[in-house]
Image: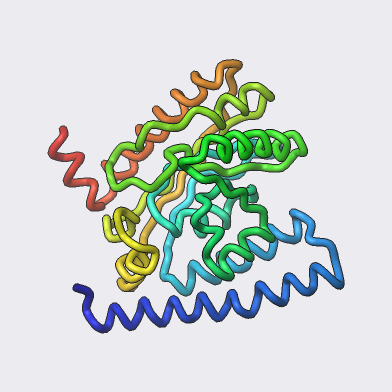
Length: 258
């Protein structure tokens, strides 16, 4: 059970985040309706401003290596926490493919919708096919896409097997795939078998969340399965490299495997 002080810290942080969304989402929605168009560039600028604020409130400290590709790309990232998009969105301007459950969250879903989130039902084959089709259309329009090819979060050192559909679509249209790794120092930051609220109090009840973000080089092949295999291999190699030189919870696990 969390220390009452840590519970208070998490509760205050949640309140500040909710209040910020209560202010920014309605104001931006009204402004986009009456005063200007909600262009991708403007939406991403607003999103970067908010995620920078959110990271400060939540105590997230992230070390970054690599940068966004100059040109359209499909970005693929491993998935650890609900906070993954909040961190990645500060460094990558991309439309995000997210679980359909997020669409049911008030404020968050509206803000996400305005800044370009595509929802997919994990157990619905038709939904996944429709999202892949729409994803291709968005990429061909010259807009970036961010996906989490594991399909869900994981608390294991290595990733879950990557789902291949988005890689096949990228190869079909000759779109470069850029792998991303985002790792956290403690397992308290990992979202696994808990509610969103439970995860928030577990992760953000502590004073600081330390993370490392690595953006890889673009991968291009004619065969989407080859791209998926190379991206998955790079991701797992990078995860291990991060924890091998980082005093993290996974460091002990790596030491046992050595």
